Image 1 (cartoon, rainbow, N blue to C red):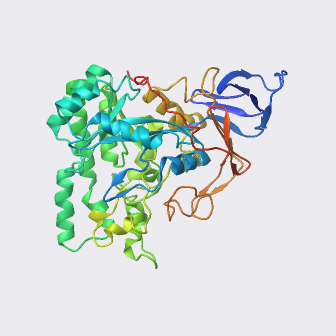
Image 2: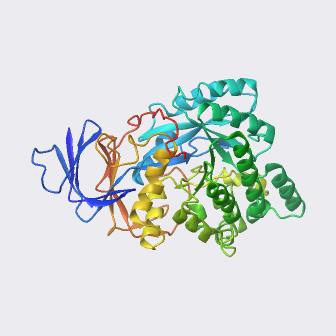
Image 3: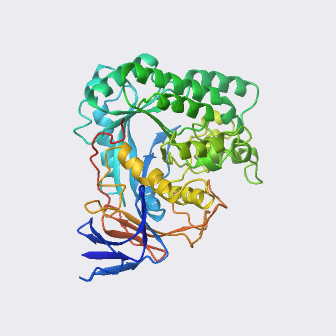
Length: 471
């Protein structure tokens, strides 16, 4: 089948230009000067006045993740369907090994959860939740599995936490294998002390989740992770950065030409400690803030953290925007922490809205059109070994394409454009000056004319190569 996207403006990370895009056999086969292709097509998509961009790549999601006595409410089926609605055509989720478990078993479990369920393509990072001789040996098999990145936690003692010695050993192994080390950088043991002190004072509302996870805890852990990476010469990627002081640590390392990278998320660009974690409602009282409990936490807008994240994106001290999509319903899930913020499952649902929320940054003059594409698609592809296949509109690439209408409008809300499996929207009331009109995954139209045309099982596992972003 041949599909022709005509009259649109193709936007890559390298710039923009008018071109018609021909799709054949799941691939982009050619780009033409508008109006010059005369061989005919089975389907023609008129993109006049619209942008034609590579499909979004969300490199940080948690579908069905067990956390805090429950599981993330989106399955691979519901979560990837929502992703497609929002212009994301590839996700990278996390296969989890907890302490006492085998790495191989964790990866096999996540393959079982995702296989045959996904509407869009998917891949995995490997969580190493327990560093010992067995898990270090298992890391040697990851590259052959197409899993070329792994994640460790400096937070959550007793669950995922790794101490400095364990991190050092893992980084040494990663350096030898070429794996990208991803780090949740917060000082978990110190945070637990602060949280216990707050709770003992009766300060148990969601707001205090943000107070316990103080920015100093993120800055300190970020610096420590950078020092360990410097010692071992291992590439380092800090996930979900929210504190301006932590970003300064990444900038410092990058100014020294180190392979240190940072990711932020939409919530750290738009949502705040004051307005969201400190929110109150008639239904939930001051527990309303539980809707936005995530880690790292929302930061103070007054202290300048949100603006610093945008600045980091402009200067490339932050390279990517992922979602850390880990949704939980308020009813029966977030409610687990009704009397103590420490028991609130950590996570926000955003996989459907990332492309739109970042486009609003273009409208507001914060980033350029090519930078938008770079942040949501091209850099994730390069960072995690998929570029050329994903992340670009060029012949030979997978036909993962979004037709985006800058004259359109998207109203975000539970009863508006919400397809995630949640009983509320963390983005209720947000208005976007743009709209995802068509989402195409490997040549198959998933969303068009306001209707979903995809199906579970279309998405394929992507075996990734080594990072293409290193110095």
